[in-house]
Amino acid sequence: MNLFICYAKCSTCQKAKKYLEEHNILFEERDIKVNNPTYEELKKWYDLGVPINKMVNTSGLVYKKLNLKEKRSRMSDEELLRLLSTDGMLVKRPILLTEKNVLFGFNEKEYEESL
Image 1 (cartoon, rainbow, N blue to C red):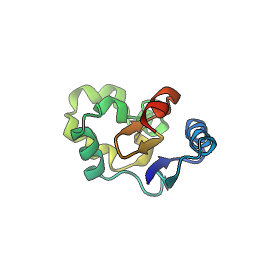
Image 2: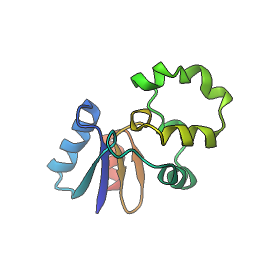
Image 3: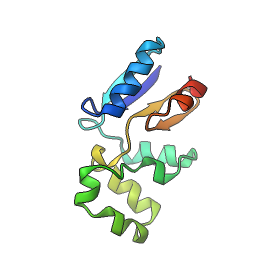
Image 4: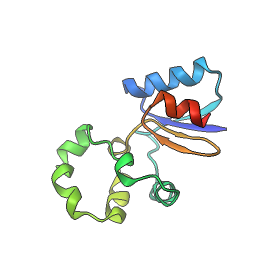
């Protein structure tokens, strides 16, 4: 079963969910704000080859409030993973976990190739 981690108010998440539903792709939905990715999950995805930069929601309010654009260059990947695990709004969404891939954000071509 695919896991779709999203934020219901996010328009990109809504587009991705619509794509999944229109293509009859089964998924379990998880609210990123209520149940954000844990450090262990983020580390696992990172270890699978997902670049840390793909995991960060650089357009989010929390990212801007924490002034992470300025601070990121001084943070290790480990520190950034730990920070991301503290607030789901820091993590790029949606996240789709399939049997083969972990996809951050919504790119229709990536979804087609992975599903």
